[in-house]
Image (tube, rainbow, N blue to C red; front, top):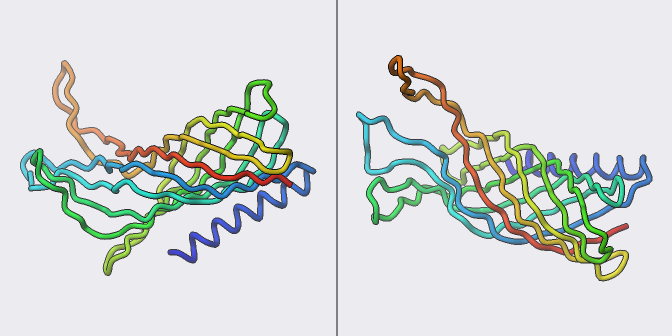
Length: 215
């Protein structure tokens, strides 16, 4: 799984670099580090099969990564970005006040193609909106636990603070949502009860900062 993740990251970065040289854009490289919040899978047991645990979640923790992009214009940047957090998968206690059950460590990689839209006239401090989509890879680091990949997307804001034309600081706060699966649930209307598919998603915040290098 680690090899697959590395190959995907390298491929995305290489594609971005090729596009940069082909279009004569300006390369932007940014290593980042920060914090990723916990995420709840949304699983819930059936009413007639309640256990001591009501779902699955990933703990919060350190996140780090790398992005490579190029500026299409002074106001738009396209990038390939990868961030990773090694965290703990937990079973959520059904009873309020009881501790959650630690299951196993998980390496959670998020690989997205992003667009950054800058606004404002200040050339040294440039706020931006960011949005993108890609894949979330979860690799359970325990015997018998498989690796999975799911579609995900993000939306957030941030700013670039340039010290000079080549080096600066980037701070970003974004919300990303990972699709988990579809499961059946009861839906009530005036005409009765219906069993319908319901999509499950996991939402997490990610707050990161890092240097910017422009070439």
